[in-house]
Length: 163
Image (cartoon, rainbow, N blue to C red; front, side, top):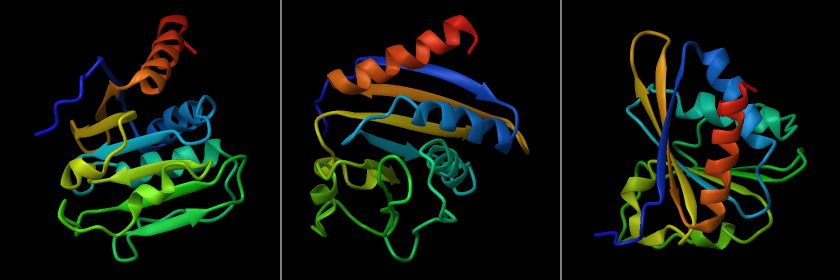
């Protein structure tokens, strides 16, 4: 059981994959080295679409795809490296060195992080994507730790100003 304190939770509705990517691209603009985002949602909810938006916002030139069978894909052509992980097939008991990426100066995105709670760092922003209909999604952010709390406040500031 994870006893880390959950600080805040915020939701946003996006109406299309393009809007999901645009929102994630704006989030990329406030990310800093060693930020960790966890992504949860059913198959096809939009986790990889969200990650593609982050990559675009970071200026990554490579084509981003789900690392389902490779577990980790690294993208280094942007302003910060992006480490995209899919741990759907990994259990909490397996140690495959994922935590080695958390302090490498890049952005770490972990899909299906609920499968490896004991491997997560103390500070991360959890993003849950829920399908509302064919195109619309609800994106829920939960901050875990002081850095993710700062990201949360920045997301809220953008929401409050309509940016």
